[in-house]
Length: 337
Image (cartoon, rainbow, N blue to C red; front, side, top):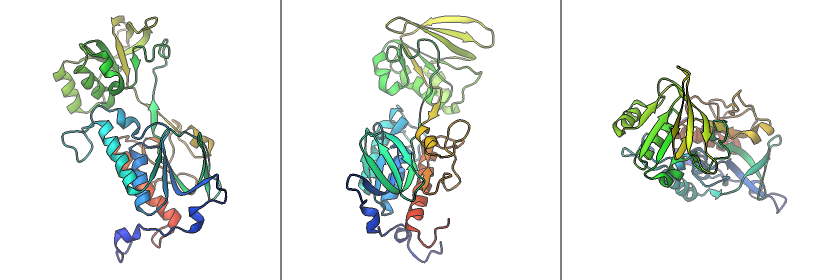
C-alpha cells in the first residue's frame, strides 16, 4: 500500500448488481457470510460490513460464543477493571449490527459447498450463496467421558459456572481443570458456594500466576495430581470418586455440584465435510492471512490451528480474515493472490 489514498477509502467496495441478487428468489445472496457469532465472528462481521460488503453472520445459538459464559474477563485490553463475558458479547453484537451486518441467531449450518466461485450454505432455515466465507465457529466443551457423566448432566454436573453457579449457593462444589477458565470458574463459585475445591490431574496449574494467587487468597482448596474417575448418584449427583495418579489412592468426596472445564473440541465437522484441511486435532489449517486450502474460504478464532486461544487473538485473526475476504471479493489494486 503506497499511502496515496486514505485507509477508509481503500476499505470501500462498490458492489456489483450480480452480488446483490441471486437468480433464485428463494436463495439469499450475500457478499460475505460469517459462520459463527462469537468474538471472532462478530468482529469479522464488523470489518466486513464496514468495508462495504453485504455481510451476514450465522450463529447456531446466541451471539457471544463461550465468552458469554465467562463470569469475568480480566485480560481483554481496554477494561482494566474487567468486564463480564455477557456484557462484552453484547457490546460486540451491538457494534456488529451498528456496522451494518445482519445477524441470524439460532440458525445452524448443515452443509457448506465451496468448490464453485459462488459458495453455497445450507442451514436449518434456508439456503444462501456468497462470494466469500469466514468460518468462526469456535469450540465446544470437552467432556471427561466417564461413567454417569451424561446421565447426571444438569443434575449436578455442569459445563458453565456462570449459567449454573447461582443454583449452588451455600453448597459444596468441585471444579475440574487446570487452566485459566477452570481457575476463574473456581473464583466465581467461591463467592457463592459454601466450599469450593479445584481438582487438577497435574502437579501445577496452567492458569496465570495472578489468578492462582487469587485462588489461594480466596481459600479454594487445590487438589493436585488427581483425576475424577466416577460420578455417583441416582437422580442427582451426590459424590465423586477421585484417583491420585501419584500414589494410586482412591478417595470419595461428597459434593452437590461439579463444574467441568478441561478444554474444548473444535466445531469443524461441516468444514471437514466441505473439504477444508484440518490438523490432527480437528482444527482448521490457515496461513498467516487466515486463508484455508480453498479459495474464498477463510477461518478465524478458536476453530483454527493456532497456539494461543484467547479472546484477543480471536478478534485479531478475524480482522485479518475480514480484510482478506474484502480483498478477495473486491480485488483492490493492492490485493495480492
